[in-house]
Every structure is written in structure tokens, then in C-alpha cells.
Image (cartoon, rainbow, N blue to C red; front, side, top):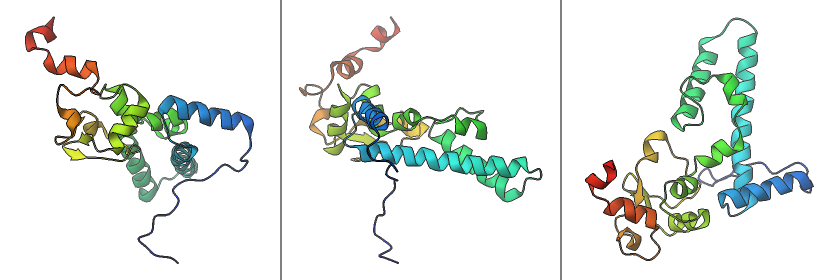
Length: 190
């Protein structure tokens, strides 16, 4: 068995490591989302694969006819989790889980949301801000770029209160955030 507190690998590596088309797609995802290495792409792929396999198994059991309470409860909990992380729409079903793509998972990462909301100029800078402890979610410092954000946490992203970037005149602070903070309520309405 092993030490129970030890972290285990949370992803699967590709079966064919030198497949040119897959490698090119991974490099594109790394550049698009500012990922550090292919391991982060593989983690998203494994997460997507796990959700799809569960959805396929649940769809197969519901197709048999009679649905047990256990199957219904498992399907509801998986759909609730995916809706909580805004990977599915509110009226999403198990069929919609099969249509999920890796980009939906990568868009829910803290790194992507920090860049999307304008707290950093680039995805790489967003990663740097997070790792260096300049970003907080709900007032709590988060230093994991791959942290998956829920719908409620998405609106709570801000600079950490003790971070030097929290000051308005910091050089690395993006201008868009500066303009939004310095704008008066009468200017926002116009």
C-alpha cells in the first residue's frame, strides 16, 4: 500500500507518446492557456475522460430500463458538480457531458480567469501573479494556477490584501483594472 498522505498521480499519460498530431494539439493548448508543461494538459484530459466514462456508464444503466436510486443519485451529483463549476448549463443532461471539451475545463482554471477578468496582461503573467501569492479568492490567498473556480468564487477574485500589486500605482498592475477602480459612479453610467 503506501503512505496514505502521499500525493498520487492525478493524470494518465498518452498511450502513444510520439504521435505528431496529438503533440501539436497539446503545444497549441499550452500556448493558448499559458500552461507550464504538458502534464497540465494531461490532467485536464484525464478529468474530462473520467466525467465522460461516468456519463457513459450511467447512460448505459439508464438505457436498460429501470433506474435505481443509486444510479439516479450518482447522475444528479455529477451534474450538480459540473453545473457548480459552470462546465454545464443549468439544464444540462448526461448527454451534454459527452459533448464537453478540454477547453471548458481549462477555462475554469484560476489562471485563465485571472487573465480573462483583467487582473493580468497575459496568461503567463496571470500564472506568475498566482504563484507569487498576489491573487486571492474570497480574501484567501490561492497560489495554485490550476485551482478550479466555482461560479460563486469567480466573482470573488481580487488582489491579495498584503500584495504590493494591490496598490493602485504599482507598475505591473494592468491599466484596465486601474481605470475600473479609479472610475467614479457617474462615469460608469455613461
